[in-house]
Length: 500
Image 1 (cartoon, rainbow, N blue to C red):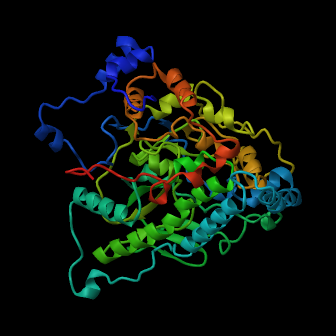
Image 2 (image 1 turned 45 degrees about the horizontal axis):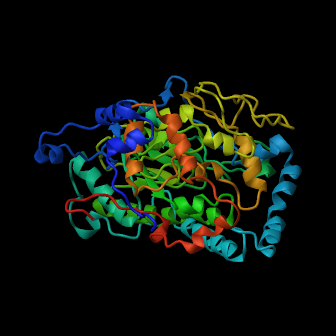
Image 3 (image 1 turned 120 degrees about the vertical axis):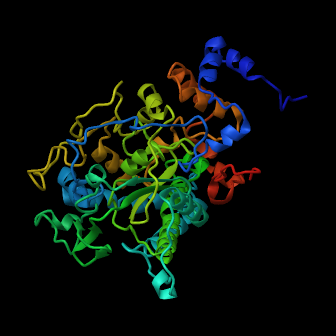
């Protein structure tokens, strides 16, 4: 008879892994001390509702030099066709990206797992949802609900703590998961971009493009933020920067690169198209404002790390959330609704990335760092640019913002693969050691240990491989079609009194 279930104590489980008493001791050291249930319940705050083993800290686990960081011009990121055209030649880059569509068609015709007709249809439908959601986004929101003065009542007032609880409850109802906040102070203002990303290569010979093509982002002494054909204006008064997350399907990401993972990646954009307008209307109805539209106004990773919704990872192109690991979407907005500040977190995630190189080993381009330690200085791309710099005064490489000690990604190499490969890539996220399910007891044990010691990081990395986590291959790419996943493809539950 097959044995489907057995009871194993935590101590025996740790011994079975070869940890012995040292592992148990490390686990015990991480357990918070509560003397009774009243003390435990009263300890809950309005900080993001992470698992108990996630610590709030005064400074993020990544080092930041605020004297170096300055407002970055996101027109120079690798998401701009003009930047990729500089490195490869504009026509050569356009020719390379134009080959994606016929390559995708051949994969569909050959009934390739994860890239067959049904998977392509799912991807196309998801992308249409993305486009539809994007049309809902406006700098100051849809403005389709009444303000308090239009109702003849005073604006809502609450403490910053109450307001954070309120905005979190509303945004989770609208579809967000984790929400963090920080004052838009002198440091945080340095993260606000000068211009959003994405510039056509047509402006390479007439640089920079006019502000009517790519609006500038400015601070002005006004009460209400506004936008014109040439700029987005942010009030200089007291404001708060917020980060929120939109999880995605871990299982679908394991099928990367495929039409299935491509569809999964579109979910965050589709959901944002509902979450943000609804939240803007909600806050407008209270008598306040939310500003959100150009990307990046504030880089999503920076906002997430500073407000405690995530930690940095080895891949500097995404961050790690304690609940959803590498498969999470991050967005930010600014508001004049006073909010309690949420601190950065330490769950041992960035520390784990120092010894884990799984994403770097997976990367088909070798675009991720294999170094033992993060560095302050971003290296140049392995691709030598064919053309001169768009702006010779920009730092080289132009596609990175300095002032943080991270594992730098070669954005040009990454975008070369993403831009020319059918159905993109995201293999790094799908194959990440933290892209595991959350239901089993072992995952809680491992996360608890990671939060206090790096001693077992190498073993945990190996366990992920041993127990079958990682990217799907062959027919397993079609697992999505055989698996009954939760709505949206992920488990969004958070504990409440009386359970949920």
